[in-house]
Length: 291
Image 1: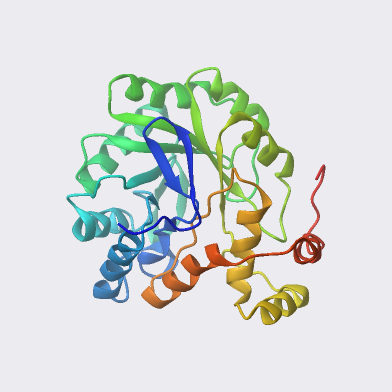
Image 2 (image 1 turned 60 degrees about the vertical axis):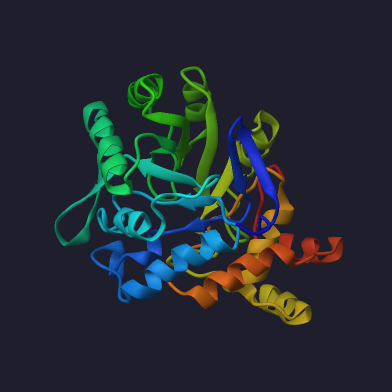
């Protein structure tokens, strides 16, 4: 693999992640359901990411469901040394592609085994427990659910654990059970409700992974962002990713795409330099409580 995009972060021994990773969700069909529109391109994207030096590959068995993990296995197995696949549990898909919460401890363990099977692995590098809604963390207790995953870690089926859509209270509770290496929450130029949690992760040595770094289903739109991008000769999406990388050394991004050319554009964001005055302009786009 080539030089690592955007540098790396190492939250635990043996777990070095590129700060620009790849989120595989978009490889599934419409509504993250069913087969890809272009199977050959989907496989090419995965191979191109690894060839570019990406070591942080984000997925979940409920993408498809199973479709994305099976594409990853087809494209990359046997997996190259240093590649870390980060998956999530805590949801299932219902009729018509609906998203269902599924956090019963027994089913969480079943989901881990399904990830192992569909990825062709004997042990998962990182498993994130999906909590809350996609953009609304809550303070529900997590001991029973996180404890179930910690049991599988003790059995050697999982190396590291993380949280997704988590609150500060839930992070504290989880850390009392087992080490937490990643927190994956909604955070971008326009939405910084988790600024305090980002700073906590930075202090604790936990990697903070913003999902929907470009706005997700509601893409970021800002005249300031467009003006900055034009001045830098970059796309608005590249600037939004570069802003995240400059925002904190604890941040690692996982932009997704189903196009090789778009993948390369995302990876190139790691090379963008944002001077202090540019960061100040971008910081003014959204509100950042406590920061």
